[in-house]
Length: 85
Ligand SMILES: [Zn+2]
Image (cartoon, rainbow, N blue to C red; front, side, top):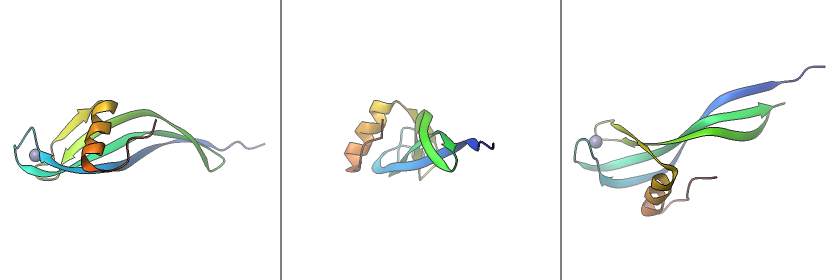
């Protein structure tokens, strides 16, 4: 019997907020990205674990790690959906 199990990295953009960057101080698009690892069994995604949230500045490329709550607030500020649980 074969059992196909895999863990693959997962990254998705959850919002884009036009706010001031802490690094370059320019008002630019800040991409809020959720990354983690997803468990697959028989080509079916089961769940994602090890989630991290990062805000990437489009102007200078600086990355700032965010807490889940900070990512949710930034997504609400941008008017997009909140990070999934
Ligand atoms: Zn910047």
